[in-house]
Length: 67
Image (cartoon, rainbow, N blue to C red; front, side, top):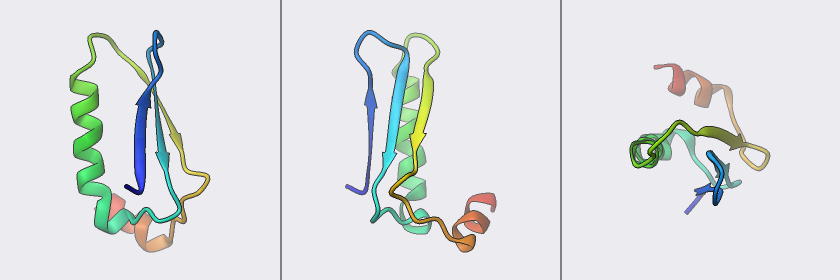
């Protein structure tokens, strides 16, 4: 999988890591569904940390995300 999420044990923190092969246009719908499912399963608010260091984001990706 080109991304993964991890809830830190005993902390209200979720880390979402995007790998280099992540495709925003092809995978963002499934990614967003996974994010909502994880958040819906929480008993209390959590802090989301997005690690985009390995991701390659193009201008087209930004336009797709805005639509």
